[in-house]
Amino acid sequence: MVTENLSPDELLTTTRAVRKRLDLDREVPLELVTECVEIARQAPTGSNSQGWHFMLIDDVTKRKGLADLYRQGWDRYLNAPGSLPDTISTQSESTGKEANHNDQMKRVLSSAQYLADNLERVPMLMVPCMEGRNDQMTGPYANAVYAATYGSIIPATWSYMLAARVRGLGTAWTSAHLIYEQDAAELLGIPYDKFTQVALIPTAYYMGENFRPALRRPLEESLHHNSW
Ligand SMILES: Cc1cc2nc3c(=O)[nH]c(=O)nc-3n(C[C@H](O)[C@H](O)[C@H](O)COP(=O)(O)O)c2cc1C
Image (cartoon, rainbow, N blue to C red; front, side):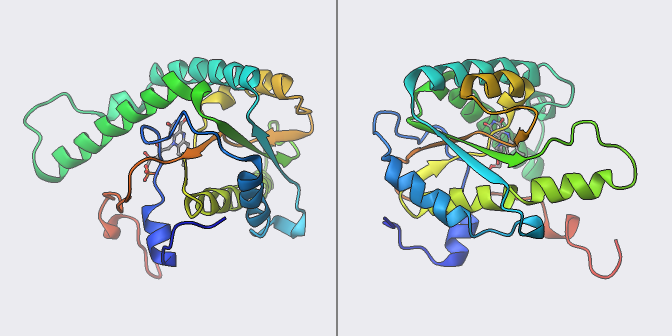
């Protein structure tokens, strides 16, 4: 049931990665997230394949198993070159926009660490999967096939997150458990050779009132008109 009255632009500009504001003590009804999945299935899908699958997990043991895999993946990510901590400057003299960006990255790291530490406590986890595996693809078609595969599940997953938001639920896109995707597949009974997991979306009621648009890099850095 929709509880938040947001304009389309408000919804699109304020649906944040929610981690510290997830209510870990309030149960999320299966029917409510099923509604979000139903809406997600209206997203575009390559060749109208509809090969998407949405795995909802509220079982305590499976949540714990997934959280353990997530933490292993998260720790590996933290130690990899170019990971979030690497991008945070330790120089105190940074000023203006640079300092704002640095502060934002520190907040993201602290929030992401909180999620990693508490993931099994999030009442509902959603793992979106897509039919097929492209692990070994190379050559001229590879990019088109990868793009079609991910492009047929990522828009739907974002729709799930938007549908959740207007129902008072917070979510965050996460990918750290994918380093251990095969172990997660075994835990959840997903046929690993036939289906690709693309994310893990913690889902819980959010606490507090408003979310704000995030600070983004200047528009000119990402907008191109007619030529790059
Ligand atoms: C492909 C992708 C992977 C991500 N992986 C993780 C993750 O493993 N853990 C996490 O806490 N957040 C993860 N995030 C969330 C980002 O950190 C978050 O979207 C970003 O900091 C911007 O914050 P905002 O979504 O609130 O604007 C991921 C986001 C994307 C799009």
